[in-house]
Length: 477
Ligand code: FRU
Image (tube, rainbow, N blue to C red; front, side, top):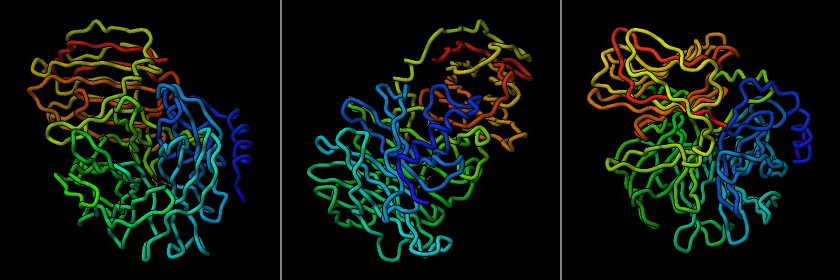
């Protein structure tokens, strides 16, 4: 099959009308129809935020990747644009894989991975991944400029370029697999076309993965953050429970110098579904990150509805004094707020109470006084399928989902300190929940699949009492 943007658009027009929208997000970005994975090319250009994404317009399964495209003035109201790039050339004939965008004067430049097999696609020895360039003046139509970085000798998995400007140079990092070792490779250029190999920026030690996908590199608080999505880390207690991880290393770096780590790999989000995050800078200097709100090889029940996959809320990043990455919803998210419903509850004692009959798009705010709470479990539930609660015996905040009909059951959790009050902000959409704990300290994001009529919100406290100092919900647009 040959691919083109025109064919993809035609396909999407037809498919869009046939969607079942029961789980389609109200205020998150998802594809018009078909499959979506990683966010790509997040950038501010010519008065708009642009979000591109890995997209398969022809099916709800992953397939030959195109770049879907949407733009926004405020990071929450998105307007769909035509597919930006399709796997049309010899350099990307098997897919336009993930990559990034930069503004070069009056031009928007996309740098992405051309994915291609030379011969039989069943044999990884035939796989070649190359870095390609596409440019645009209007931010909508792109001209293909072909390969700018070829596959290094001895490497097959070599993808997801992230480009940034520093001093008089462009820099690019690319995720790679050398044997069983995940790597991030560094390149430098004066013009985005000729790239010089600057060696390996960092690589995995034993246990840190065989492939590092979607690397990103940025400065916060004067330190460098190397964010990436390693494949092949083993689960370890409460850590690394998902098939693949996404996380970061903090350290120091200057052009021409090695990257010196100042700590260990840490995960960014502790829910079931957060992967391949990418960051970008806003015009007012904030560092925002958006991730794919799904996980490879996890069931996606919306596939039966004609679409698959969604992106997370935009989250502002900061670095704490002890070098931990913190995420808070970008302030633009507040523009979605409509009516505020305060919940007149102060103490719950071995009971549950209903606070909303049908929670659609909502931001829930809960502040618990931990010292005054004796209950073994207290928190909030959505229908029969989701509970977000304090487990006092384990001293953890737990996100539990229970959708046996979709083979999605299980918990994720983060530690709590018993002597501190707990504040939780939950963002509920048709099929997702994002939980922000203690103003950026931790985050848990998971897909959820409530049936219609099974979206009642309840507060509960079992085996004791729980003291809620503040609670309520914003109806979101
Ligand atoms: C990460 C990833 C990338 C790749 C893309 C393919 O989720 O595997 O490494 O470029 O997805 O769609």
